Length: 129
Image (cartoon, rainbow, N blue to C red):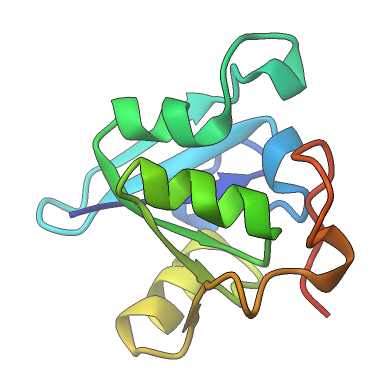
């Protein structure tokens, strides 16, 4: 299974998780079977490219997104692409991956989406408070 993280650079497992999901420069993808780490640039429209982050990650066969938090519309878009979202990640990719493996992160639902983005657009993604 491939899991993805919104990240601030190219340090792989040692990279910091980005707070604003759609505007991070990179996504770090970890294959849980092979432990392969792949870093892809954020080429979504948020960064001057095309498409939305869920489309970008679906092309990489990602099944789980692990992030700090995100809004209701984003959760629905990920669900449309068959990607489960887990929230509450902090620190580096390796820390969030460890928390995910231990079952410490919450699966995102419309009910626990970022309240300030319940009716917002995908331009702003914030840490869930």
